[in-house]
Length: 339
Ligand SMILES: Nc1ncnc2c1ncn2[C@@H]1O[C@H](COP(=O)(O)OP(=O)(O)O)[C@@H](O)[C@H]1O
Ligand SMILES: [Mg+2]
Image (cartoon, rainbow, N blue to C red):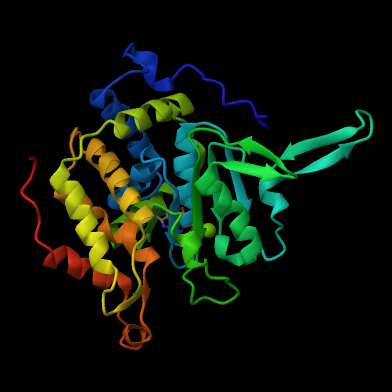
């Protein structure tokens, strides 16, 4: 039983110029993806690489974790991406008193009908923004994270499928901050990539001041693609070619994290899957129909680092998993491009 009807396929705003819609290949992808990228970039100043990564995760059918200090535009990025695609979007502000059923939904008894009725929660949307996810209790976090992997929800013994595309964009403050419950590793592993925003440079910050002159720039953002467009783009990405040598390279990188002397937890096979999937989308955004080792290298830190745990010694030395991954990228031999 489906809880929510699938999102209606509205005519594509991007198809208004008479270009072919569904079934479009890489050209169509680049065109639509660029529109989304430009829309988001019009709101988030000076962060093209962050915007590209966010889009990569969307097209790789993944989930995105944005982790950074307060006030650097995490919520803004999540909202901008959600708003640039005309699809169902729900935002959940995570707080310590939020319950699992506030995410998934509840069955309530309907007196008139004399039966239980399912009231779907905010997870029944194409894009779910989980803001400050590490402020909720682990139980509530895991309610969301289960949906992420299975793309379905079971409430009172009935399973409901989620929409397609289904993307969770979660934001969180760095774990060291007060009043947070750090996400357990098993749950971090469900995120395709973790990105941090970083401060804008002074020129971008000046642009930001100008853009925020009267209203929020978000209010000026209108959708440039719809859910159907995104489903099409995902199909194109899935068909991207990944040479055997590049697959091998991804596996070597992941394997090198396992048993690394500075790590007590290495990357999972799920991480390998996510890495290759993300590389397909990353290549497509670069207008290529094949993946090169550079794609894997660029994605290694955002896709792998958040899944790794440093040893106690490495922690004392203030060595971060990001550094370990960066060093591995430099150290491992790179396969020659395109077999
Ligand atoms: N790089 C940036 N580009 C545009 N606006 C930004 C940028 N960084 C921060 N801001 C602005 O700062 C404010 C706080 O951003 P917000 O997304 O709420 O932060 P966070 O969720 O990281 O705490 C917003 O008005 C946002 O537009
Ligand atoms: Mg925020």
